[in-house]
Length: 321
Ligand code: ADP
Ligand code: MG
Image (cartoon, rainbow, N blue to C red; front, side):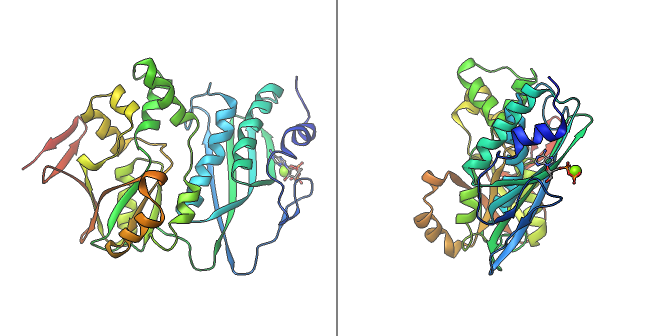
């Protein structure tokens, strides 16, 4: 059943997110009014998901709602920010009510989990495209950036990269896996868990941070470039999930951990002198992060295996002594 735009907003989006006292005026006027506390900086990010480009066209609507917010939560996590308010620009081929209901339910669950209010948006007709703008707060001057890391510092990643890329390949029928690993990997693509609490926890420890959305090696390279150093990653140190090891041979699993996208994990640098305190305050087992390498003088990102730098090509990599 088709609904008018106004009815759709009223029914599914007006009370979609968390209620917050700092929303002076939410959905219903021409714009929202939000109060930024003194001593805080406003942190803003936006990301768009296009059907057939950023998710398979037939993905579960609730997963699309979840991911549209998750990708932005991940950007705020990388800044060490606490998310507060979101806007939703939704372009729909037709206002199919049950599709919108499921989409809104997926979005609402993640909004509430992170105490984010949905304060506005736009609804238009066209090819399925979802844009979320996310606003958050950070104590003045404490935001994490891609720049700031120095040679000699330790490089870490959260979670087990590569899982989401394997999940997408399974979803698209490009990869096969035993059923016991299939579900876990598909869920890592469909329902990513952005590391918001870790990002906030890293303020005061990390010298630089980036979220891993386009592949760990490339994103570590972006952090290194912004910081004016080189990233050296140990192939053997890459953390792999049991599911990824079960689905692929170890070589391919490690390659996917380096190159796969859609992880929404954090890659961050910590000065050597702060690592012991980081481990004491945010125990790695509990917080789920692993040291994968070291920052060096120079530029670029490289992967070291058995003491030599791996050379990558289209057909995989060649091992040079
Ligand atoms: P305008 O034409 O003034 O932009 P709209 O009719 O587009 O107003 O929107 C009415 C109200 O509903 C606004 O407060 C807007 O922010 C909100 N809104 C519109 N679409 C969405 C949506 N998909 N999710 C959340 N809020 C929305
Ligand atoms: Mg509008």
